[in-house]
Image (cartoon, rainbow, N blue to C red; front, side, top):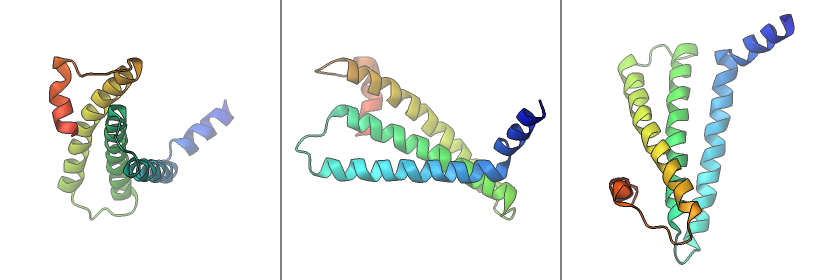
Length: 128
């Protein structure tokens, strides 16, 4: 039991979570840059790719909010709490967009000629 408690204390430490989240953010940024570079050479961009962009950006913003909050807790306590709270609230909004984009992404992969149903037209307007 002591071994599991030791592992939990290491993995649950803010000093471990901050670099892990930063690495996650950088990996998603590299994936996004590679996808953007690939789309410049394409004649037409498939609709699922737009949803994938929205998923990546939403998740990156969530990582950014975590990085900012953990940096404030660990290293920079002089960062204004209002700024951190604003970024966290915007990250919650991006979380909603991310989940909606995941559902549209999966739905668009199922069919060959995907067209948005009426209930999804509002989100498609914001993703373009």
